[in-house]
View 1 (tube, rainbow, N blue to C red):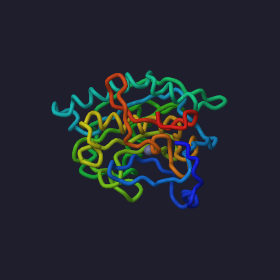
View 2: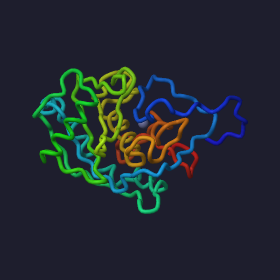
View 3: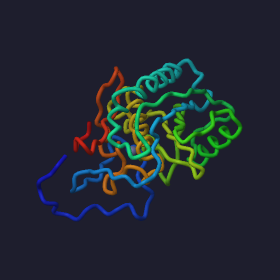
View 4: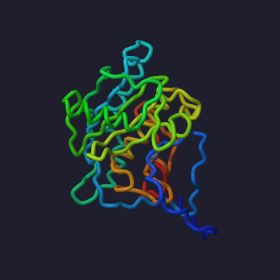
Length: 259
Ligand SMILES: [Zn+2]
C-alpha cells in the first residue's frame, strides 16, 4: 500500500547478517512491519522463467490411502496453477533475456528408497536431491527445474536453526550446485493450517513458495525487498480462490498491492 505519511522510524535494517528470507512463516507469527511501501528490486540473478516442477512425495506414508487424496490434489493443483493467471501476473518481473511465463509439471513420484523420519534437516533434503538427480531417479536439473519436496504427516523439518510448525510452514532455496527446490512439510499444526482445511493450506503455502522460487530462485539474488523479503512474504496468508484452489496473493510492484 502506498503511504503518504512520512515514516516516523528508520527503515528496518537490511538482512545483512542473515540469509535472505525464504520461508513462509506460521500464520500466528507477527510480520515485520515496514514503514515504507514494499518494492521488489531485481538483483541480477536467475529467474525460473518457464518453471518445470517435479514433485517428490517423500516416504512410504504417501502410499497410504489416507494420504493419497492429498497427493492427487497437489499434482492436479500444479497442472492447473502452472498455466493459470497466477503465473500470468508474474510477467511484470520479466527481465531482458528472462521472460517469465507459464510452466509445466514435469512429473511426480512417491520416493521410498529412504525415509525422512520424524525429523529431517535441510542438509539431508539437499543431499537426497543431489543423490537421486545424479543417479537419474529424479529428472536432471535444468535452469528452469524446481523440485518440490512434500513431507508426510509427522515429519518435522529443521532448517536455518528453526523448525517447521514452530517457526515456518515451508521454504525454498538453491543448493550450492544450483538445484532449485522447495520443501513443504505436512501442514498438521494450527500455525500452518492458518484456519484453512489441510489441502487448502498446502496449496496456499505451495503457491507462495512457487512464486518466490520463480522470481527469486537463489534467495536474495532475484526480485527481493530488503525490508520485506520475497514476493510471497509481503502478502503472507492473504489468499484467494483460483480455479477452485486456494492460492496466496503475491506482491505486485505495478499495482503497488497484493494481488
Ligand atoms: Zn516466502
